[in-house]
Amino acid sequence: MIKILQKMAIGAAAATLMSAAAVAQVNLTFHTAGSGTPVALTATALVENAAERGIANIQLSEGKVATNYLKELAEGKIDLANGPFILPFLMTKGAGPYAKVGKEKGAELGAKIQLLYPHTLAVFTMYAYNAKGIGGWDDIKGRKILNGPPRGAATSNSRALAQFFGGAKHGQDYESITVNWNQASAAIVDGTADAAVLTVHFPGPRETRNIAAGAMTMWSLPKDKFESAPAQKLLNKPGSVAYTAPVSFIQEMMGSDWTIMSEDDTFRGMAVTGGDFVNKSMDEELAYQLTKAHIENLESIKTVAPFMATLNYGVIDPKVAGLCGPNPVKFHPGAVRAWEEAGHKIADCAKP
Image (cartoon, one colour):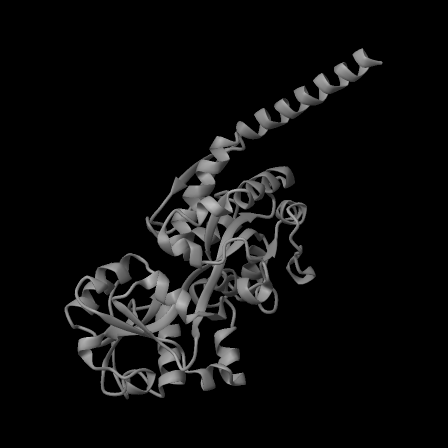
């Protein structure tokens, strides 16, 4: 009997090793955005964790354009990609950057993008140097406001927030400043813009460079407007969610050179949500192993950069992660197994 059990154990161990070896032979391609961004750091973490566990060899390409590589993912040309949920949403509608794809083809492609794990990409807020003498959201009129790059969702979001919470329309009530992302920090430091309504990290490279030139103030979204039905509709549209955190937490993360302004002890903003995606055709076991590697390394991922701890890694609550509702992206079946095995509950609306 003992010999039989020993043979069974040896056989099981051999099968496990053969399975791991088979997965380890997989070569995957992963496209992400610029180096140092949350998506790039998250991708790098998965590459390292997958290699250490013998799951797969992942070739990572940074500095890519999300609108392009998410389409490539849907077409099966690459294996992994990450970015904001707004892009798969637009793809399924054949809208925005995917207008030429068309609604029918866009819907077909968008349905092929599935999620391994979500996280917050950044949070929209308003900030300026104290020397500018700006009083907050109601002091935008007549100013020069940095809204983001010349084109794109970030600039549209920035202008929408300035109009709703500041009562100021770009080109009419204030001068809208637009520059490429790599020039955004300089536009604030050299005074090209009086204030910025942009995505931030707590703190990210841009915020760190800015604060080196002088003390700054960051303003929470006004509470009364934030809690209104129209604001919640604006904040929780596809690709974003209403964001709240204790002022004390934001203050601690940003440091003493920053002043965090709010009517109470809660900081309010608009979070851009997204995650790491695969094509729905990915093998279920492979998607499971990749997701499991992420889940079991959450604490180390949060320490990769100071702001990573503020980006809701490991949180799959739809209200925080931006899942369900108009967001068409569902979890991959392998990811569902990994999350549920780890004790997390995935909302039915986020399951494939």
